[in-house]
Amino acid sequence: MASREDLKRLIEALKNAKDSIVRAKAVKALGNIRDLRVVEPLIQALKDEHWDVRRRAAWVLGNMGEPAVEPLLQALEDEHWDVRRKAAWALGNIRDARAIEPLIQALRDEYPDVRRQAARSLAALTVLSEGIAKSMIHDYELNLEAQDRASFKKSKKIYEQELKKLQD
Image: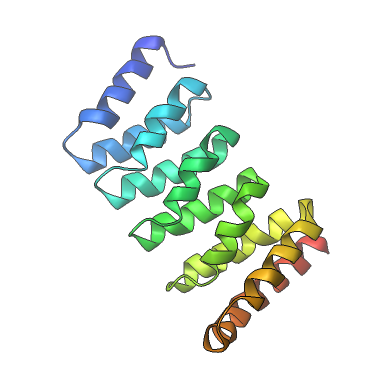
């Protein structure tokens, strides 16, 4: 159990350390502290200048749950693909229905790893609310232009495979 002083030092390092490695290690250490006081500093870390700090913050927040859904939805639009991938994972881990539509959109990300993780997370969410997710995916696909629909179908196939794995 971290003392109040340890918690304060870690949050201070996360906010003020010049070295991104120190900030990334602070994120990891804060992730080991199961205390809601770390949520807000970790949400702020999603805006860090270094992608690795943002990526680690997304992962830690995905393990913390519901208080981080909105910031993680924003992280799905991060400039770095690995931050978007971790945000997709985190949203699937939290399993909040608000993530369904943004994850559907992430199925069209330019990076295959992001699309694959979005498909996995979407499959996990579908297990919980199958009717809603399938309907939203169908509506999204119908509204795509013909050329976009073909590439979307490839990602949708990954989603369907992940869903089948979860249901089996």
